[in-house]
Image (tube, rainbow, N blue to C red):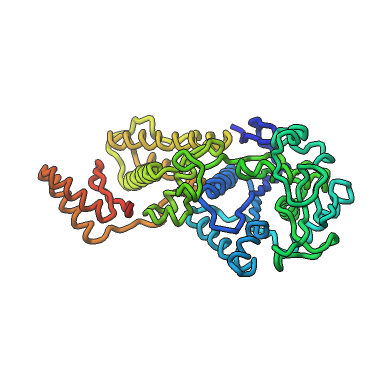
Length: 472
């Protein structure tokens, strides 16, 4: 099956054709964090989707060049630094570091570059692009010295979000800036300095000031990936006005189609509601870890639902993620044991060899839900074959090789084998004896004691298995 993605621009599933098919090279730009606070799990839902995209493209033999920006200057970062009474760079650096820590915890691959908006080469690029837009009549400086983009001079404005300018005027969907503008929808390219900005300012032909949010991404993307990009990702909340503005700015300067495929990730909800600090349902990665879960479990929970479907985060869902990974771990353990012994009976099961269904599901607009469905269907079938002694070492090796391949996309292998503490191991041994003596009451009591110590005991055909579950 050819790779297919839902392109937000066309609102259709399209077969993927990169700019340079012969080179098998793909450029991806992803909107990264705005570092005014620690990124929350909703942000990381989008970053994990982008990670899945990159990993699957690489699995399919493409060389991916991915850029993720860091927005380290905007109204929120300046306000936060002012309230904290520290320089902007000191204020944002703590949240940059936290982002990279959390991304590592969730096993998100690092992008090739992480350009920051305040890096001088990109500030220079922003000023250059703004000057070009003014020269082409697509931008103007208002009386307050700020520079704005003229949306009514760009005929394709609104095509990504699928509305026209008359609709924009009548509904007032664009928030008014504090500055004078020719049109309600004109957005700031360069914001003139005022006292609330403190020492956050750069010199420009239009006076001291700072870039608008939208021009930052256009400058960084084109500086690092060129005038045309294969794939641009972000959350659905980025479609308008941010990505719409990126198209207008970039194409206004280059005259070329900016992005071939726009992919957007749906929102994350918490218990069916929008995540909000006021509702007490706002969670960061450390908040989830503090509940006793691992980064691997949270990765699975944020990964398992198709990226265009809203994901409802619940603590029950986290328990299900733990159980799903425990099933996978147990299956892998059985396969590894099976490679060490050859069955006497000739295998006759239909579960002898993997198929391409997992990868084909991901080829179809990254349908991770279908791909995981095939994984667990395979686990059931191969476990049944092993239970019936209809599974040989060669089959086990084939499935382990298959797992190694798909796990380059999933990255869900346990980091290391965890050895149970002596106390837990002793209780497990006592429980094994109790079961041998058919003392089921004592067996259940020992199971509860083991659970209270943060471990889970599972009864399998091969015997008792222990797994750490941590405090909840």
